[in-house]
Length: 175
Image (tube, rainbow, N blue to C red; front, side):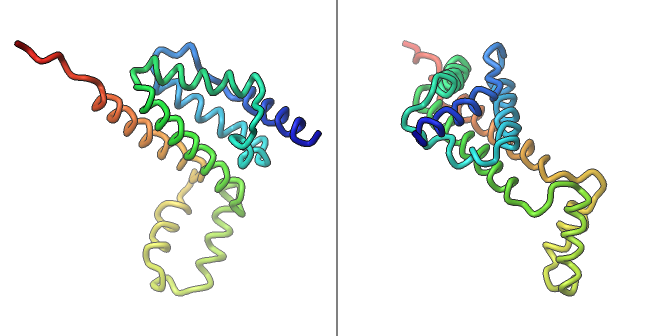
């Protein structure tokens, strides 16, 4: 039936995500997995809202979830912190993929044309912060909205690393 087809399609998408299980460093593995997941969701934008909705996940989905948790646990995360990290990373990945898929531009040329079109509809001083962001960031050569993903991902990974370090038990108290 329809649910079986959706389960299979989502399992295929999970199977396309690089799990980086051979990485010794959990941050590198999670970075690689996040970038790969975003790429898979760019190829299959229809899947973004369905990735975690299936109640009968297939083997690729289960293998993916287990591998991600294994990387986090082997990286020194407690069970609870691994659950938090998994949720945070997936929320960021899926949210960014959803936002990226709904943007009305895909190339830097389209981005610039849209920004200039919007800006021409109001005086530059009407929205000074939007104007500043557009002129000094968005309209700069080489701007790619997709680069915002890597910036946010690094902030999240650094924050998770701090949480992992903070949560580690300290040395046993002395006599």
